[in-house]
Length: 149
Image (cartoon, rainbow, N blue to C red; front, side, top):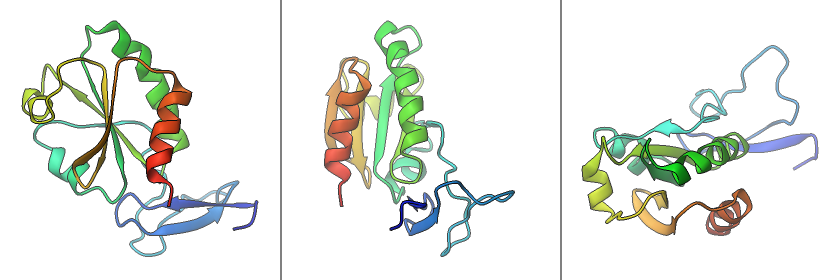
């Protein structure tokens, strides 16, 4: 891969696409296989009990899922970090947020007892868990260590 291009994994079909690092002037980059827009997950996606299967289990990308609540101070501290990581990892990792107060079934399914809890999921299966507020570098190191291919 040349320094003038980057590889972005399609969030729809999982295909790896090479695109210019500066983007395509005046156009949105699309997947060469399925034609879906690339980089659409530049912000965390909302995950609920109802959409967990389609958003997380069916995702061709690993998912970093933040289980949080609006009244939780440490959860609010982690939120901007996850927004940054979602932008940086667009096309490599999907970042999702699940409010445990509004979605108790998924929180119970994973036995979440403290928040914030960050789960790394592949095909809906937990591969790592981080509990408590952590700095960006620590989260990134754990997740990137799991997704190296």
